Image (tube, rainbow, N blue to C red):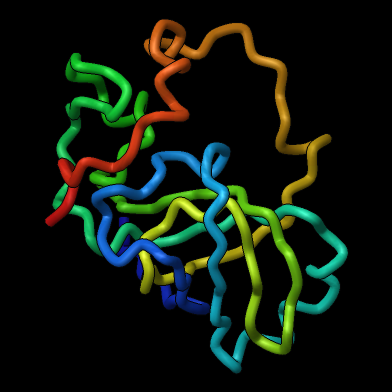
Length: 160
């Protein structure tokens, strides 16, 4: 298979200057930030302001090379990388659902930021509850750990 390459469409700006201390999920973050969309992609923002939440797809540019086993933030046991949401992955791609506060030209103002300042943005999709919210039967190893989420922050373990 051929190598796949992506070009960032913008840069995410946040109060977090390094991974350590960043909330590990947007659902528990109250932090605000902005996204600077590069001018050549600004036209693609048309009608996005009609959505309250958006899904950001980004590149974990500060993560070390991924291994197939890692200890997730809310556990002490090594788990398969595809069963955790840590940033060190074979393809260091992150997703985050954030609240869209407003758009001014090519700048998006967002809330619920759990992303390091300067992170390259690869894509944006509107969050649509009928499409994106599912009833689930199982949440795997998180079942006994999900209550830890509000107090967990990035501790730097996945950084280059």
